[in-house]
Length: 463
Ligand code: PXG
Ligand code: PLP
Image (cartoon, rainbow, N blue to C red; front, side, top):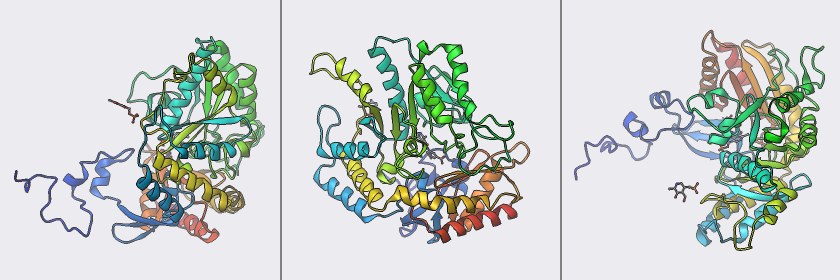
């Protein structure tokens, strides 16, 4: 068959440079991407080392978001590369159901060791979205197993992000992620905790707010309103991010998470922390739970667990939850939880996870973040008062900037800013009316300075 006039075959292609013609690029429908814009001006990264990418033109780009919040140790870490290569050559796959391999147990124990006391059993998934839906199904099944099958309603939070599967978007509170998709899973939402524009709080907003203008920790009492409305006998779980990443880095007021914990405990509702971004270093501890001093019943992770090198996520549960399923499992040959993925605890992903967890510990990554965080906080807040900056929020090595919207086009200016930053050699995240920074844990103070001053210059130059 002659393929020479097929649009996907280009006989004139230069093998030394990636193809970028529209017909070629359109074959991949890219996720969360303006595909038409990308095809018109492709942004192709071809290699990465440490805190920098190299793009298809050979230009160095600082990784101002650690990939998508997942490569805190920097790129191209030899220990992870070797572990993955060796695992590929030794056991590239083994059936996830009814069989095991030693690495998943090693990784599960390494994770449990880093969890707050009480979270003892890890269920592996392939991503954060799968972790979210797994945790929600676990919560419902837990109550049904205990004879309280009417406890099905799930409570999320406005501005929450829990991935893109049906459970996750139902509890999620970013409307753009939900509005195209119709009926989801039965859920309701707490108010968000984002302070009014112009608050410029550093770290956690105060418990009692700003002269009474801002309710602070009392926002958690919104859960009592939802309990009044739905009754706790119908509610399975509350799921929140300790601090919200995707929404533009939204930090809980002091005391907020503890108050949610207390209300959940008093009303027999499970509390789920989605730590896909806050976990394994970004918050300045192994978990946000540890840093905020509040332990959930279920904790979700992904991203940083493999330093982004392999898709892997999971759900860690309290002993009581695991024991409840085991006790209700029927005869021993029966399975206790009819759920799992072909790639749950994939051996190669587990190898990457074990190597990453070791590196995080060896390099004291959570502590390094804790030490760097005040410097980062001072740097990002130095942009207070700069053109277009409506608010700045930060925690650990994460910061969100709210950008004054262009009339009718709230997402346009952040896009323009991110593109101008890229032209200067800095990758930053734009989403909604925000710009987000999450530099690698290995960043130096001078790299943080360069990133923030480039952002300052870009803001001044943006229309
Ligand atoms: N929960 C939380 C809290 C997340 O942040 C997910 C679940 C879903 O994980 P997966 O692995 O299915 O993508 C996430 C992911 C961004 C951005 O720039 C955030 C995420 C993913 C991609 C981009 O805000 N969060
Ligand atoms: N769809 C079909 C037809 C399948 O056979 C399977 C798994 O066997 C799935 C979806 C689920 O895939 P995964 O386990 O990778 O989530």
